[in-house]
Image (cartoon, rainbow over all chains, first blue to last red; front, top):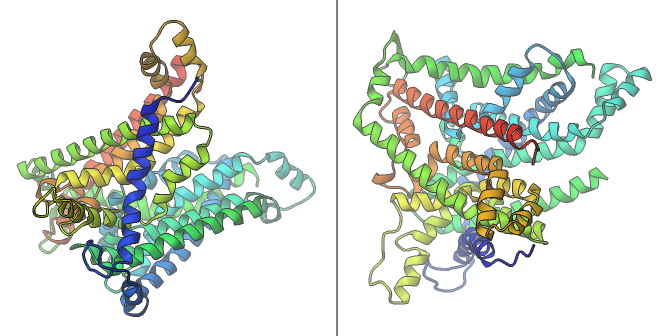
Length: 258
Length: 282
């Protein structure tokens, strides 16, 4: 059947344009000397201010990185273990674990944010980096479990049985057989978790306290009342960094998968 | 690992998710039935005040606005996503076409919203173009109304709709369309009556992935919305931080949770009937 029908093609082109054009506008605006969107002349002024006159911003970047790495690490370790248990285990709470761990993924973000805020307040935990870490680990877990489970689906259980038959103990099997084989899944789970954590605004907004501003919270307060040229420059840097990270991750995964 | 040690492996996650997800949700349920405290928090006395407050015309209007905005943005998203996903699935350069859809979403969510503020703002890109072309005499206020919210929600949801639609169209057996055509169906009828029912699971997924997050949206109406686009998410945040009526915030959060759970039930029902009815998993 020919696919030369014009309508889907037209919609696809429109959608792609609709998705990409706003980002191009930002890139162009970041090199504009003017504060408004009216083109004046080429300038690197906003980049200079971004890199040399935005200390709060870089502190927020540091907070974001600390939280992303720590929450992704914890979520990846306990989430991968859970995926292994769910895949092959038979135990009492299995259906509870399977349903409940996925729920943070399905509910709108605001629900997790609100319930954690109320929870922390009711037991008197002060809001700060610690509470953000807990919240991020919560929403990272379902992604880690799903990604690692997908990898384990391809895994032949007879390899594990072989390890036992050859006399391996439980721990040896885990560390020397299961983990190495599922490494591509575990790594892509970790990278996904880092990305989700760096990206999150809504949940963080509810559980952040004074002094625990993350990058999205900083961006939010900067754009709250309109356009800010330094944020244009920041956007371009962030787009460039993400593209670089995604390419790096892809090559790394390809290398490991071999 | 041995089958019986499954509980051991899942123990850390079970504890984590119980303490930091199930218990907090239970506290939300509890709070919604308590009296509000003077400066936030609650007094431990049973009360239905929060649910009575939900019947307030103002809250009902916000709920209706939220539903309408989520519905219109979902319809817009799916209507754009369906033909786009179809085109990708039928193309020989699928990977490239998909990458073009996904790449914009490597960009931070707030930056994507911000891009629209830069375009639609009073001193924004669109206004400066329209002004310099002489189409308008003075800047138009595109931002801070529900149409801005809807455009940005469509923008942020499109990939979440395109990807599941693409996945199900890709698996669809297009010889069925040819068969329908051979039997005399028009091209349009063949697509509507053969393809659409077969990719129903993909369509339902796309609708849920768009509608549920949009219904609970907080940031977008806060940034580009106005008085006509105050959504439930914004009321919850206001009740928590400004007005400090925590039982009311809890009750509203519960309503969103219940609506989401309802959506999930619809979703699994749609999947089940399809599996049974057609006798083949597509």
